Length: 248
Ligand code: PGA
Image 1: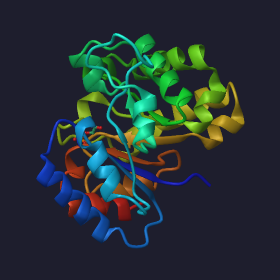
Image 2 (image 1 turned 180 degrees about the vertical axis):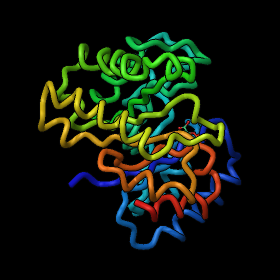
Image 3 (image 1 turned 135 degrees about the vertical axis):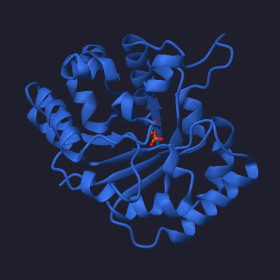
């Protein structure tokens, strides 16, 4: 049985004060959850979050990571640095990185590799644009995004990774994919991996992301191939986030 993972992606939000409050509120409400829970703050707040979460079951990670380990790469943060601060996860290839910062499949695959090399778990985001869905090429797009990683790292690398299927048209729009729409793509992803290695396909956690809320999380997480969620907006309000965590 795969575990449910709920990961909060705080994006470019918060202040030192609001981060402290949010972590305290989430910690206070965690209780006895079945799901694994993690938060991904902006880089600069990671040391603070690490401190606040000492001894807690709540994991944390980064929203991005460099494809490089060290050297003259101004502005970058490497996976070993994230490891120094106890990060468990790094999100790679989020659609905002792809569309706003021009990060492509191969670059994302190198970030995925760098993350694993440092012993962190990559959360690899894949997903189609609205026009791609309308053209009926969702599976081709997701396939291409996955293939870049499989070609560089091999399918076995996915066994200890997390995939997040995030249809771009559902991110931050309030428009969630229906549980069946999401399940169809999740099943496609798992099937594609199973064709290469059935054991890896059985193990890999595939999260859904895109306007997940307290009110729709349970029906999404109940689908056979949906193993939790990557949560943006709703992860910034402790009660809403906890409701999603409890749905797992
Ligand atoms: P959203 O974002 O929950 O605000 O739609 C999800 C994400 O971008 O990971």
